[in-house]
Length: 115
Image (tube, rainbow, N blue to C red):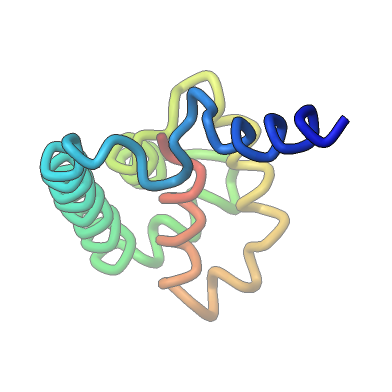
């Protein structure tokens, strides 16, 4: 019985998943990949932020009316799939008061909804 417990304890660390760190030899590759992913996200977020802040009144009007060219441009930049946009517009409309007071919250919402 002791051998069974000892074997279980010793082999419990031997799983296919090496934990959250992964293969140590792949760390430089995964680090570079993360760096590029972060750079792409930052660039996309910057584009969405410019659209929202430069056309803030128009985008708020588009949200209130259920869509429009400025909102479509912002959703496109954020990477929101076209099939999800009607649902996202409803969600944006439900929080319109927040977005009118805080353009940064609107940018964040669009980025969360994006892919």
